[in-house]
Amino acid sequence: MADKVLMKGNEAIAEAAILAGCRHYFGYPITPQTEVAAYMAKRMPKIGGTFLQAESEIAAINMVYGVASAGYRVMTSSSSPGISLKGEGLSYLAGADLPALVVNVQRGGPGLGGIQPSQSDYFQATRGGGHGDYHMIVLAPASVQEMAELTVKGFELADKYRMTSMILADGTMGQMMEPVALDLDIKPAPEKPWATRGTGMKRPHNIINSLSLVPEELEQLNLERYERYHIVEENETRFEEYMMDDAEICIAAFGIAARVSKNAINAARKEGIKVGMIRPITLWPFPKAPFLKATEHVKTFISVELSMGQMIEDVRLATECRAPVLLCNRVGGMIPSPDQVLDSIRKASKNGGND
Amino acid sequence: MEYKRLTLLCGHYGSGKTNIAVNMALDLRRRCERVAVADLDIVNPYFRTKDSSDDFSHAGIRLICSEFANSNLDIPAMPQDLYAITDDKSLHVIIDVGGDDRGAYALGRIAPDVIKENDYEMLMVINGYRPLTPDAPSTVEVMREIEAACGIRFTGLINNSNLGADTTEQTVLDSVGYAKSVEKAAGIPLVMTAVKESLYPGLRDKIPDLFPLRLQKNIISENN
Image 1 (cartoon, each protein chain N blue to C red):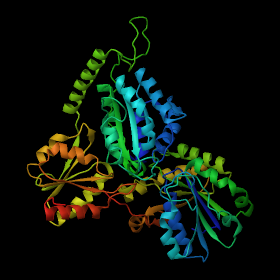
Image 2 (tube, rainbow over the protein chains, first blue to last red; image 1 turned 30 degrees about the horizontal axis):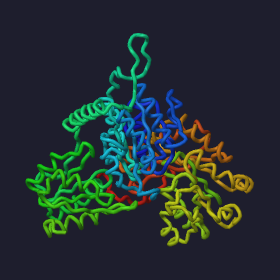
Image 3 (tube, rainbow over the protein chains, first blue to last red; image 1 turned 90 degrees about the vertical axis):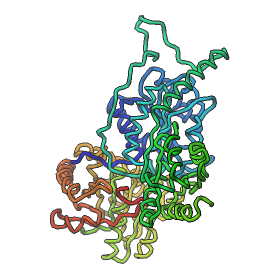
Image 4 (cartoon, each protein chain N blue to C red; image 1 turned 120 degrees about the vertical axis):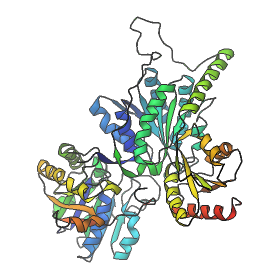
């Protein structure tokens, strides 16, 4: 009938993962991401894949570790409290340099919190999530179409750099329905000579491990990993600019906050206020360069977030404190309205950054 | 559409059951005095008929709904006044059932009374633009799963094929063939085609039994 389908964000992630060649999904239900698991449960048996509802989030992430070790595309998904449970596994994946895709459809916290949308796992995602020195590639979709596209990109980058990619979405992104084109740009998985997929009696066996008891060697592993992270920062930073050419006020927002902010920017422009937006698509690596460049003409930055102000720290670091950075936020499952963002823009326009 | 005393709306999740239930109830209220909407969704804690509770109380429509719906308490709970659906024969009820077979299990509790009274339509809401129901075989598969879960056979279809904000007249016209093929494969009639009300004037003469839907507002404007 048409080249698009109507999907929930959670479904788009699941279908895109299947299209990207993922045939192994391990998860545990939690609102607001349960449709990812439900979709996988329906689809995987029909295409010869594995859907397994594990006994817990901890079990699921360790199953991911197993399949990733064997060199296959694998994923798990959860929401905030469940991601905390996976924290140890995320660190082990990083310590063993294994590629995997992890989805966090965030809900309000801390603790068990609520089931409404939130972005308050930004620190957890961009600073690693578990213990030790490491990063994940963190991708922040702002539409159902991007949920699909960044899922594919997440697998690709994970394989390329032997890292975990995390889709950091929120309850709104997971639940909202939008038309999606599924003709995605999919590159086949690369060869993985390090994988434990059988030696064929032709080579010594591979070992996948995150234990390293000799401090000199462990230091070396960390240094090499960070050289790789540096290449990721150089090559894989993604962002979108909106009306930034003449902007004197710059909104920093990702995900649903960016969608709301766009409405507010359009309204403010009609009032003659020169406002634009930088929308980070990768939260790690954070797009530092466009923010620093924006300080040449931007007088005030406003970080619009569904948190108490987490990304705002990265905006301040990126802009090197050359202009004030204000916060416009709602928390606990509430979403800033376009009018609230518009008010912040008006205030910044009037006061020039003096809150 | 002629309403029976009970109208049961089932379908794949995300097919648009709740929006149709809300609009049907308002339509029905114009014809009868005592109208209720029953929200039996035990699957999805979001997008509930309770979102329209203000509209219902304004129109004098009774809402039969779990007191935990929309409370963020994410547990599958049935309404405490569930049996009003089958016991109070003076009520006309639109019953909004949860998605897929999992949602339809909730109907099992009242199914024997519904069948015994035999004054109902059970309608399957279909959207050919949803990824898991793109054609007649996949749609009928979901249908049969729902019937097996709740113990009631479908009596008709509602074509609600749409692409959200991207829906045009052509989107709806293109779905007519899909709806007809489901009608044939399922062996039950298509009783109406639902469209957002802005498309109603342009399609009224092209599609029979067209039903206009007033949709709930989004926080972000369309095409942004």
